[in-house]
Amino acid sequence: MEAGTEIRLWGYLSRIAPQTVMKRQARAIERAFDADLAKEKDWQERSNLMNQREYEASEYWNALADFRSHRLVLRAQKYYLDTGELKWRTDQYANRFLDDAAQAKLNRVIIEERRKKWEFRIKAVGGVLGTLTGLVGAVIGLVAVWKKK
Image (cartoon, rainbow, N blue to C red; front, top):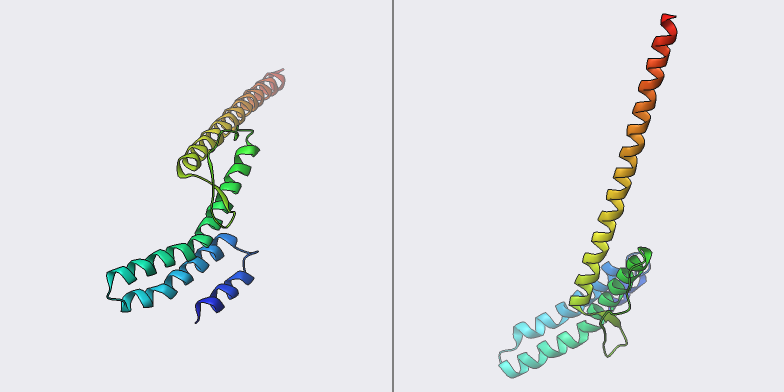
């Protein structure tokens, strides 16, 4: 299948699974260049083809990074985390995405916040279960004393 047709067909599914579609479109472009790269023997032409391949596919890879970065920032905002000092990059296609270090740092902070939240929930549930167990024991004791009288 021709690369343009394949990219267009994947584009129709972009609302359903945007990450998968962007990956597939980038890989379709890379596959389109693979045949030319395999035929080329001259290292200079091969280098030019590889640069062109990277440039063409970067639109989709950077759009994917843009999507992931914004989703990560939304998750951070859900936990009321500060996102003001993050380092953003912008590419030639106006995709704005977090650099790798900022993305890793933000992801670690989100995981830590989520862990703290779950620890709190587990402790709260444990406290409630302990209280209920005590109340049930007290009720059983009262019923036993009441039955003896």
